[in-house]
Image (tube, rainbow, N blue to C red; front, top):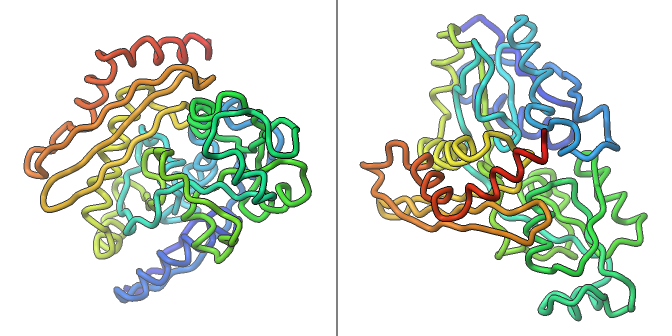
Length: 316
């Protein structure tokens, strides 16, 4: 084990936290490793909404290139950011045990939030339009479906940057992934879990990829792969891929295993939040083959195809 494993990561606090977890897991198995920092396009352009940037792979492309050019041996990603179709020559070699999959509303004015959230009015207690910030088209669509009168503002940047922008703004709140805030110790007290909001496929999971032919790395990462998280996120990502294939779409999915049964929920929304189609189904773990794809096909046949087609046509 004289080889030093080069772990590629973005420079954000969350990305470094994730890479450091992998470094520790490798160390626990007797492997030596080091972090290699790579900038991504998503870190450089902080103004353009993600859905206007062709977001698929926006946070992973630079690391993929470094991996294929042998500058690093593995790349660590938030799995929800990873395209469902990996580049030729790159494979997923591990998924860490999943953290929280939930979304949070971090609010600035509790009185305004308390007066508004039980209702669907678009006006806050102050009399001004209720404004929520997010760059996620999935969160935007679900929020507007739940609260059709609200205004949505674009919010980009790493977790620290987005929290600061919220603090300096006149928005009523912003939506964050719970796992992202919790992992770097930044979950504020002024946060509400959005139990009604279904997460992005693989939200809360950390994925590790490597070169397809690197048997040394494949063996090293096998030791810390979490089988349940790997299965659930595969189902969710298969569902996403069968619908549209990208993470810049208002598609949500969650698979959970309980007593040998996979419980799955999925949905697709129109980008304005006005239309939605949902699915909820179960399967025994022993019969889970192509479960995510089959769930997507069922959703499409039950009205989802119309929404999916409209999203595809809007992107042309």
